[in-house]
Length: 93
Image 1 (cartoon, one colour):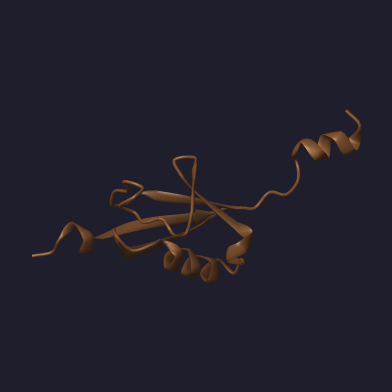
Image 2 (cartoon, one colour):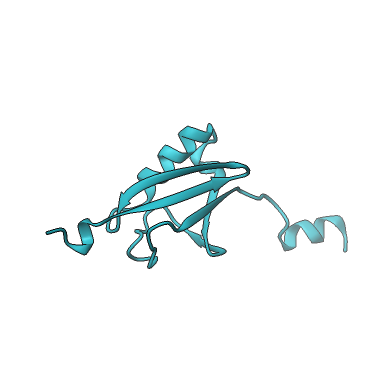
């Protein structure tokens, strides 16, 4: 019998028009999935940000912590730089 901690779920990661599905355990941090995904799409992991239902998630979080279900989708985007208050002040608004 498999406990919930050892139960595997399928997670779909999407970046631009690329999607990859991974199988992972509910209690394992997502860092391995994120690393494998970044290698697959050939984008450095440090340049990516990951979101579940528009909420930013961190690599050390687990699917269990995030109450993820089998088949949930994580969106990956490139890290945005700038745009803070200092950028507005520098332009002279």
